[in-house]
Amino acid sequence: MGKLARSTVLILVVAACGGSTTESTSTTASSVTTAEAAAATTTVRPAPTTSVAPDATITTAAPVVSSGAKFAITMVSLGVLGQVVVQNVGDEPGSLAGHWLCQRPSYYEFPDVELQPGESAAVSVGGDIFVAPPDAISIEGVAAIGPFDPGSGEVGLYLGNAFSNSDAILSYVEWGSSGHGRSEVAVGAGIWPEGGFVPSTADTGAILATVIPSTDPSHWTSGG
Image (cartoon, rainbow, N blue to C red; front, side):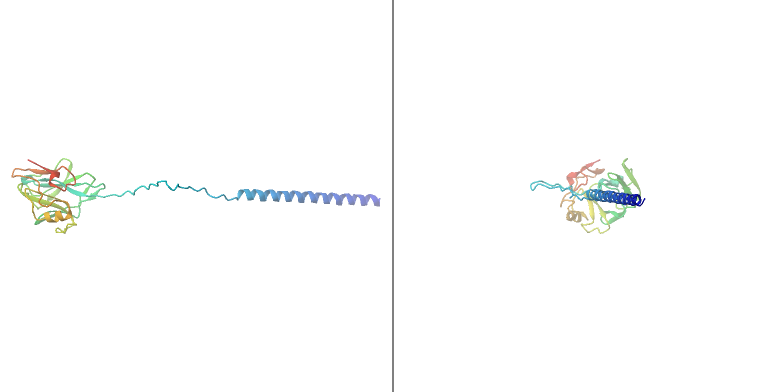
């Protein structure tokens, strides 16, 4: 009976030791497997690089530059039809507020009229008849800088009222003869040639720009 008990105890001890060994081995294997997986997951690979051959040409797109709203005189009606037409020749909408017309020594400030690119506005300068072109906005009131003598005259468009400043004048035309009150200002701004004028007679009803913006008498035509 004593031998049987000792044998049973021995078997239990061996079994216990065997079980413990198996569990330890399993745990160790599991730990190694987890570590390898982690290493595989966290492996950092260098980012791919792009190389440019020494003789390659790299082209950078030029930035888009907007010129904004710009205004120019495009038509002048003379005598009893007296009016001035101004067009937005820029690529953005803009207001005529702050712009002035000048036939020295008379001046006129435009109201707040917004023009889309390519759009025009017409204002009477005191003639007996005012009929704006069909595609132009008609400005109320009269720009008291006329009437315009068909035989000789001028008109300039300014941003601001510094009328003797060449930096302020935007557009200019004179007809019949040269050397009017603001022609030197326009010449100084590089928007009109010295001594230049659009030919006209006492019967000329209007002068019309054929090149816009116009900077030379050849950019204008006159008509009845």
